[in-house]
Image 1 (cartoon, helix red, strand yellow):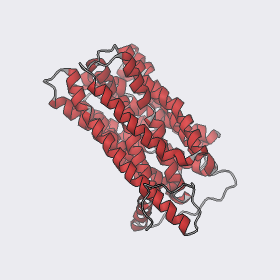
Image 2 (cartoon, helix red, strand yellow):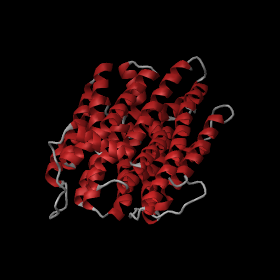
Image 3 (cartoon, helix red, strand yellow):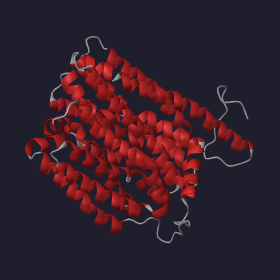
Image 4 (tube, helix red, strand yellow):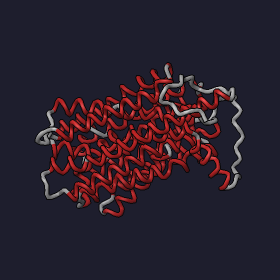
Amino acid sequence: MIIWVTAVLVYMAAVFHRTSLGVASLEASQRFGLGPAALGTFTVLQVGVYALMQVPTGMLVDRYGPRRVLTVAAALMGLGQLLFAFATSYPLGLLARAVLGVGDAMTFVSVLRLVAAHFPVRRYAVLAAFTAALGSLGNLISTMPLTLLLTNVGWTATFAVAGAATALYSVVLVLRVRDNPVGAVPEPVDRTESLRTVLTQVSHAWRTPGTRLGFWVHFSTMFAPAMLGLLWGYPYLVQAQGTGTATAGLLLSLLVVGAIVGGPTVGTVISRRPEWRTPMVVGYLVVALGVWAVLLGWPGGRVPLWLLVTGFAFLSLGGPASTIGFALARDYNPLRRVGTATGVVNVGGFVAITVSALAVGVLLDLAEPLATATAFRIAFLSVVAVLALGLWRTSVWWRRARAAVFDAVSRGEEVPVQIRRRAWDLAPA
């Protein structure tokens, strides 16, 4: 348990650094002299690097162990945030966020690999959800508290202290974290295997229907609340909805509180009733489309505060729902491939964040002559499009993953979850 807590603190730091630009976006725009599209590039670059690093991170974790990868992650995040604290030019700021993105990319997969090694399979879903929920505390710190720090001590001091503390924490990881339980015999790992063998491992993970379903679950559920919290939620609330800065910070905090409360709840439910996992995801996605339709279609563009609160509170459940993707990867891949499969799944949500954040920035630039509220309504249509794509692909791979389970049962194999055949299931091969 101590090992898990020590590792989770790194993930909390990663989420803090990742989301710190959410409330600092207006300050960053002034500091670097940027418009919406250029400002969005900060997040697109950071999240894009994160997405590109997920599969390599999974392979590194499987090959070298999560302790080493987490240690490097903490050092890189600290270095990136220190560089961002002192950067005054746009190119240097981009470099800082790229370094930060590499370190951030190496945290969550490593923590989940530790959970897989140190805890029984039946507890994996709960602990993965608790990990995500506790990580969301980093997001909470990056809302109101970070806003107050930026206001009172300034940009450089705030980010420099955060970066230095994270880099120093790498020493704690070296001393406290173990890759496997004491006395456990780790599975042998061939660190001299060829690139072809490594790519085969990735291919096997990707071809597993449970992994592919997990990818689309993660793609569909986590991107919208993350996109709002990372960058565009604060400008949308302040500039398009006319809320005060304090109210905007509190509304963004709802995204975090919902994740903290919803994470353990979702984890507990799916550990007891794993057959509910994908139906819960599909239900969330359908209602989320309805929420966006109301927010973007409200007459006049100015949405009442109570409706903003309700909408943001519901959308916040996307983070907890996304952990279902990791449970699917864990169930349908052998332990030696869990890191790689988890990395594959984690790519999904961050690809969606990258696409949606960039699309919103570009559309805001194009719609600049229009009223701000109208411009945001047009820009956020890209979020609806990504959400609809995710719902479609999740539905497709849900049916295919179910078909793979039924085929395994017909061959007399054990399956992680017993499910009933429905009328809408694919016909037997």
